[in-house]
Length: 139
Image 1 (cartoon, rainbow, N blue to C red):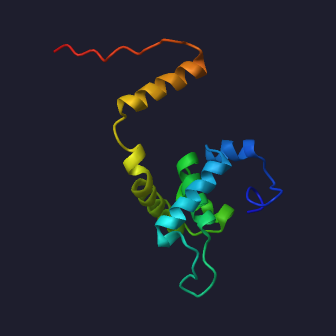
Image 2: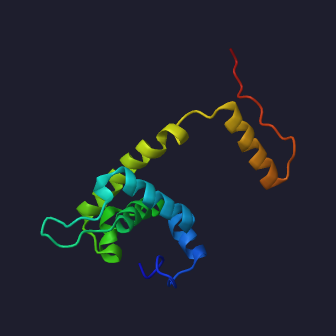
């Protein structure tokens, strides 16, 4: 929490973006969406009756694994989270993200989507009118 999510965090936005491969605003939006759509991410007491992990901790575990390729046991030091819990975070996170965002983002792009992609590419690389050729089809 003190590293990134308090009023005066230890690390700035640039370091957050480098470590998580996204903006903090997007990260917090994902945490909110995941918490709303899957009760597993809601903070609840663990099996021993002690305070469980927060949604922020669970999503941090999953995204750090995805962003860095770290194994689940590497979160033990940083998040004080067991390997099994880290693995569960990743599994529940991936399932929930596919359920939430799949219909919009895990589909074939429409012609409108392609037009927006071309426009964004032209604006970023300053190559107006550049269109990619259609794939070669010998038949």
